[in-house]
Amino acid sequence: MKSSMVCVFALAAVQLGGAPLLYYRGIVNAASNVPPGLPNAAIARGSLFSISGKDLGPASEVRQLKFPLEAALAGVTVEVRQGETRLAAIPVAVKATRVVAIMPSQVPLGKVSVQVTYNGVSSNYTGTLVAEASFGIFSANGIGAGPGYVQNVNSKDERTRNSLKNPAKREQAVVVWGTGLGAVADDLAAPGKAELATPVEVFAGGKTAATIFKGRHPSRPGVDVVIFRVPKEAPLGCYVPVQVRVNGAVSSNAVTIAIAEEGAGCADEHSPASKVLAEGGSLGLILMGRYKTTEDVDSATAKSFVDDRLAASFDQGGENAYAFHPAVSLPPLGSCTVYARTGGVGTAVALSFVGLLPGRSGLDAGPAVSVEDVAIARSTKSTGLYAGSLGGTRAGAPLKVLASGKSVSVAASGGGEIGAFRFEIAAPADFDFDDRARVRGASRAQALELTWGAREGTVVVAGFNFDKPNNATGMFVCSAAGSGGGFRVPTEALEVIPQSRKAIGASTGYLMLGLIAPGGQVEFQAPGVEHGYATSISWAVKSVYFQ
Image (cartoon, rainbow, N blue to C red):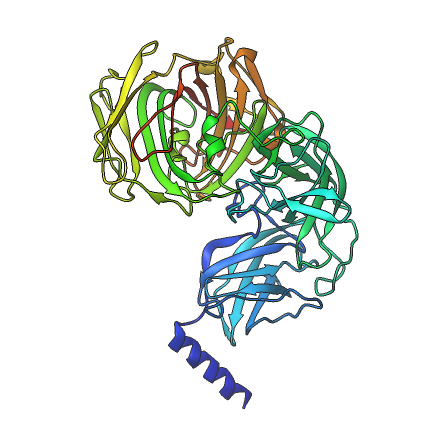
């Protein structure tokens, strides 16, 4: 009888789409979504992890939110295996393309294999790495970046969501939701309100924050909360980065919180476009960059070249208190945020961030956006996007458009939603950082000191490393006052960068410093655009080996 039922379930699975399939490298921390292979990608004991695949469960999502939890949910079970040790992970949310489960608190550390079974039919195995603790912070958009799932503690009995329209104050307590602080005694039982022993450090805008509480959420399976007090020295802004480091070595993904003075709204003077993201309406962003690059690390032949590029987006959308756009949502001056992504980014990292925001629709500004006499055609993949080369020595094209010290004309003939426009903006000012040609390595274990000749404007400090075998990139992005003449990249930002590999071509690391000089940020007017912003930035780029 039992074998007959198994055959029936197996036949049903085949008819509905086949056996469950787990995607290669499809397991991530359910909060951070950091790709496998990066330093902070391990799955902690007792934490929530996400499994991606096909035919993993029912078409509509089913959740279990009440204790005691069950080892099976809607016909779905999850097994974690290391050698002869086999343990059941606890599914808390299941659907056809994704299973979220609690990693068993008793699972052995190191490499494990995971298998999903749905209605008696088992999937293939896929691997992941288990650690004692590895914290991930939930974000409002679900991707592990941008505004975090964070609450302002207004009183003993009142907590409200931190957002662009509801900022925290300095010295106010806030609650960060995440997962990955470590094991508990019983994954199935309600944990109660008890602190976990895992050592925790919290950084808000680059300042160390006092931790008030760190432990399991009493009623949300697998969810941890870290309560900290906003430092009185924390910078003000709409996108103040927050990271949590565990065990003195593993830094989380970065989310952002809004911080403002009592009774005021958040603001970012160095990034004026960020203030309009929450308001909704139509937005035009244009970014021009000169990339002066030296490559002599991880390359058989040293080379230097200059590229000029442009990217632009035109879109519209509704009001969104959690809106985020990495091209303009820069951290406050003196602080750093971090990103992790599958695949590479290339040295035009800032331009790769220009794109349509989720929940917003593209607007047609015509067939091309032109800088002087160089036209950048509209993307064939998405209305409202324009990106391309303005010339460059690597491609043998003349550098005739973005001449330092001069203004350039940016124009479009207009399209279905956006009318014709033309405006002037300063070309990227010539810029470099000290000893760029001699910089070859950067340690991830100690703060990185970078200096330049003091300049007016804002300096964006960025670094990234693409790890080819894992097809994953870790990066940091910082903002600094150009007049300061230097910046110190903290270790919590560097720790998310993967170590460079010895084999040539197996990894690609870069340091990038970009100057936005006075006159390099302007507002522009165009019919159909309620808010238009253009930025001109000069990048000094150097290949490096991250140790």
